[in-house]
Length: 373
Image 1 (tube, one colour):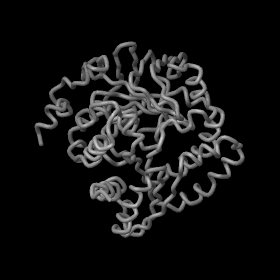
Image 2: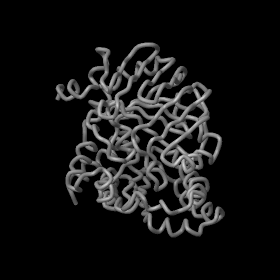
Image 3: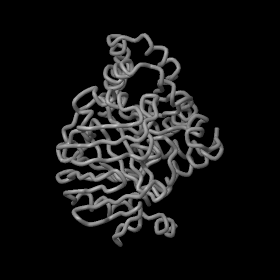
């Protein structure tokens, strides 16, 4: 086993979960994730915790979904929900062999899975301390346009970065967002306003995601107005959506288009909450400077922002009342190579083309951030 996995396992158990002796932790791994699961089991025992493991293969899920019924999927979820009720913590490791494994599964079947199986498990684990991460495999490397060796090195650099340093550097921007009323995003094909008034902004520095690096907030549910074009592709239910463009009125998506508009509209028609925003966040990681077509990485990219269609997080200060069976992060990069963009907070231009302008925020710019090493 690569010794770097032990360092990741230590970060997960000690930094992300802050696990205590005697606590129960569920480790759920998909496909190649079993390799990292082994290191996590060993670290859990070393911390005096009690690990449980759930392994899933996407090829088996695909076979099940082809002929699945709603009743079958709901029943399948029950053992996981019962077991999750006994846990204190939950670790999810996503490492599918093929990100397009479900591309030929009908949207109806995938929607059924989301509604009757995935959402039940998500509700159960929402009561726990949790963290989500990935494992570097050939599929992820191919999606990123990198060799496995190159991608693995990139992965380990991100996973083992100094998250305490990132948290400190993110504080000034988090304070701006906590005090903000109106935020305006201006970019090619984009002029969007949201209100963050009454909601907090949390610094994400390795507690719930690895890799990490964002300042996450929630908009007033009915405050989102205008149009936004997302320039980072989004893999969702086995299909790569590109050129997603949304128009909002009083918080609700009233117009939408994408490379497959019909398919996109079906994805956001599962319930009323799908067409409202549950998250509004800024990517802050100076280490993430390229698109690798993996949301967990891309949404952390320095100089980016993202919004999530669907459910909000029920953290204190983050609950805007939007309930949905989906939480779909869509990303817009403001880096010059992606067309640039601006972030305005209460009339002040705070970021242009991915670079922070006010003196107190410049610590998040890569040249300043890395000069402090």
